[in-house]
Image (tube, rainbow, N blue to C red; front, side, top):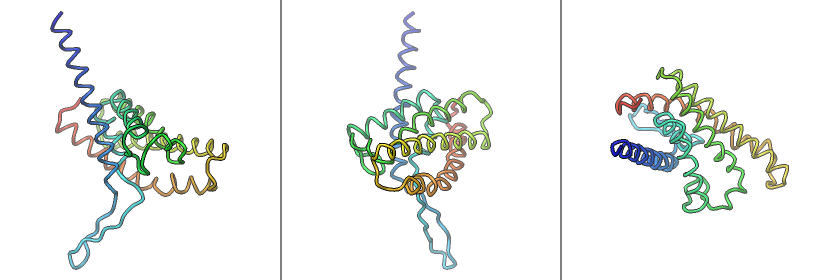
Length: 199
């Protein structure tokens, strides 16, 4: 009996550590700008910045590696930290961030994390095509929720910008970069799963 209680406690502790690690991945990845690096003729590097960071990919990596429960807990924890404690979001933080047009995309983190984690856990075939599909579907869910939030916010008169401009800035411009990063994070998660022997 003692061994069963000890095992349950150890599993809960392990889940807590995974969730904390997931939140830290999201925060750290949010600070990483995405860019393309080219080698020029004189062997110097040319850097072209892209319209995105690795924040979403940090979330998806957590979900692919740790499953839907830990991914969702990490997403919710990230939102709570950003709303009440630290300015970890792209544009800062605090409760007032709810009124920004980016907040709907942050709400999309929760179902996106659950979706990619659930699909990765459900299908035991770990390959780049499957994981890329899971992350792409999760990215689409995130953007759909963000667009719905923009529509409701616009109907309530929260923003003076045109709805088409808001969708252009928040979805259409960053989406191709985020899609490429989804493929990169899928490959990284497969490599990490093999290195860390994650089931």
